[in-house]
Length: 271
Image 1 (spheres, rainbow, N blue to C red):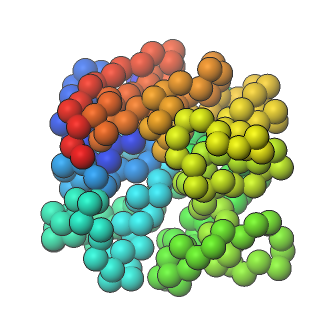
Image 2: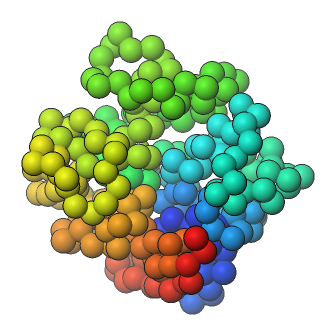
C-alpha cells in the first residue's frame, strides 16, 4: 500500500492518467490525496472527476476554490464562466452524482502517520491543527447540508476581516473556506490578501502564509496546491507545494507520502 498526493488537476486528464500509470496506482491497495481544483480551465474536467468518482474509497479530495465554485454554480443554477471549459461536465447526465460526491469531500486532512496536514491552499497560522480541522468540519457540514444553497449564495460576499462569535453561520463559512481555498499572502497578524496571485509579495506588510513565523519552525509537514506561481518552490523542506501549473503549460506533480519522492508529468498549455 502506498499513499500519494497530487497537485491541482484542473481538467488535465491526460497528465493525470499518465501519472497514475507511472506509479502503477492500484485502487485496491493505494490511496490518492488530491489537493483540490479537480476541475476548470483544462480540456477534460469531466474525465478527471469521473475517474476520481470511480476510484472512490481510494481517493480523498481536499476541495479547492474551483471545486466549490462548480458546486455553487450547480446549486444556484448559474452558468459557468466559458473560460472554465466546463460545458461537457454541466451536460453530463451524472452531474448531480458528481456534485454529491464532491460534497462528501473534506476541506482539510490530518495524516498522523506522516505528521502531515493537507488542504488546498494551506493553514491559517493563527489556527492549530486541531482548530483548523474543527473549522473545516464546520464548513463541510455547511456545504453538505440541506441548506447548502444558502451558504453558496453567500460565498462570494466580502471576506470578514476578523473571526468573532457574532459572525453569522454564512459569514463563518465564508471566512473558513477563504483560508482553506484562496489563501496565498497574509499579513503578520494572519489577515488575508486576496489580490496578489504572484509568487512575490507586493507589500512590506504581507508574506507567504507558509513563511509566517508560526509555521516556518513547525514540526508538521504541509501539503497544498492552489499557488501555481510558486512552481513547487517554498524553500522550506516541510512545505510541499504541489501545484506546478499543469493547466498553464507547466507540469502535474504527484508525491509519494512515504518517502516524498516526486513524479512529474509535463504538459502543453491549454490556455
